[in-house]
Amino acid sequence: MSGFDRNSGLNETLGFRFGEVTPERVALSMDVTPAVLQPYGIVHGGAWCSLVETAASMAAAAWFGDRGRVVGVSNHTDFIRAIGSGTVEAVATPVHRGRTQQLWLVEITDEQGRLVARGQVRLQNIPAEEGVPGLRSTAPTPESSPT
Image 1 (cartoon, rainbow, N blue to C red):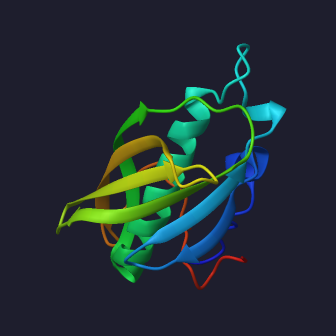
Image 2: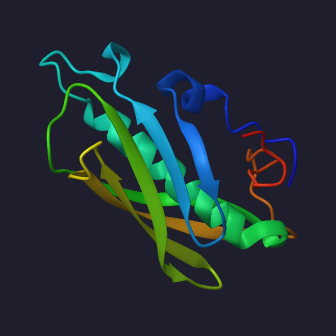
């Protein structure tokens, strides 16, 4: 599982910055810029969902490691506090890590430590020998990705 650039694609577009990436916890941050606001001047729910899914997916992949890949199958994100500026931090922690699936909780807080969004992501563990048609052959790992 090498060659994945976690600072590209949607992560780059939304400005995600990775801090801690371990099999036990992932922390990343995002500046709230005009690019992530909806017409009413608050963060678009899709930005929260993307932040939640990215944090959970990186954590799940770090835990599953060389055993294979993980793919998201469900993302349930609640929007708790509307904000239109500042910096937020998302922290993913495991709820369940099993043989076939994982469930991760992600909490997003603002600069004052207030909860602004919370989500759960369920991921399917795909063993290396099985593969998935159409899925890239590379996946994120803390070791293979630049910080």
